[in-house]
Image (tube, rainbow, N blue to C red):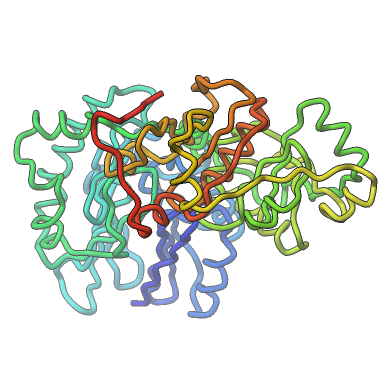
Length: 464
């Protein structure tokens, strides 16, 4: 058997391929599927089977395109009510692929239709070798129970407890665990960075598996849930229908500076994907910077929404093509085009460039006690609770659009996050909404802590 894990760092997404006797199985494919086709060809195999462990909410799957290009059959849990051509599967469904046996476990909890796949490599042993857990069981965590339009989080959490204890934990301790996500994913809270584990290791170290009481488990999983991005339910529905092939998406078209200026006056979104320092030095007024690194696509979906039609600003053609794919991976498909010639062409056409001032944490430590300066923290709740700057106003980036900032539009506002990436996004969004006197804190809270600067006392917490 040949086994391969494909890890997409920007979405913390893991997909898999199993090959035996010239047949290949792909589990939870990403939107751009060429990697699976190339890998199968390299191993002299044909992709015959595709499994979806559930309707993914944080990315758009490539299952439909992969099936159309290879003739493979798609298998998905019966409760998904999938609209594309597929085979519904339930408990005890089995599929033999060469000398591999794949057995389905129905494991509702993260979503009602979730399944896990127990794989046995019969060449090596008659006992199960690994379980592909989707978003049911992560390394160090379990799936969040609030991604269903038909079940409450309490209902799903109870179902998840049953799935874990009645099915997953019945497997032997040496069975390998391969989940669909790793650290950084929005589908859980406490995932570790490892790409695989074992049932035995998770039994001993996973906090959620230490909770033996169903009621306590349900309470723990539904208390202080991180906010659910609005696009999650939209992505799940896209996956239920099956996304269009990437080649069907319209080509990016060049936009002249004069035309982009006209679109901006109408309220168009302009997404600048250059590094934050280049954006800070000069950018199209009204544009928002989400640098093409880190969790770019997730933040673009959160900041703009899937129905937006952003125009892009980039340094190079390669950045544009990569941006197009990464946006499509989360369901942003209607990209308006790109600024032809970039910011240089904008400036040459006679349009002014805006700048975003940046300050160090040492400057912030001098400024933040001044009454005319406000400090805004845009990190997630868990980050805020682990430490923050005294008297900072806490508004998570994913809530920025829906939470009115209780400050005057001309007030001097210093924005920080963990490292400076999210705070630059926040600065662009705040300026777009009318705040004019903003500065980004370079290095963010990591730099503040590293410099040994003071942290807030509990009584100094400020929450918007």
